[in-house]
Length: 233
Image (cartoon, rainbow, N blue to C red):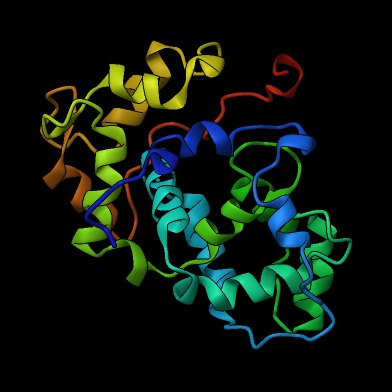
């Protein structure tokens, strides 16, 4: 499964960062015929996974998102059922209130700063949690510290296949739409989060170490320095 990284995966980050509700990914899939009246069994650690995700380095958040996208249906089936149950209005995205109400129905203990936590896992700053953001924040580390999964994610960023992620490659993966939001300094900061030998790029050993670290080194403050909704079509 991890031997080939699809073109869809390589286009993942740019697709994740689409703000238009009409273009939101997975909406139609989630709307098709799934009842959300049955409450699924929920692992109480999901909130802890949310907390862990929001503190991770930006590069690690991006990599986890790539991995979440490539998980099999079987691997994500529990999170999928939870998402559908939480999405009470069936629009394919979750509001902070839907998450709060749903988790309370499922008898989870929520932290006092829950709304802030939701904002921080909203990596594209759309104001809602989309399906892939939910999967990325909700999966446990066992899925993203496997070498095969990490290597597949690494290849998404290593565009020329030379075994290193450069600043230029990271810029290209993030896409030209976001050049205003990721200036040279912020790209440098994201690279530094994993660049342990300070050579200006990230090789696979550094990438794997970052993915397996319990707390990765976060230099850049967030995936986006500032809200950018108004700049995007």
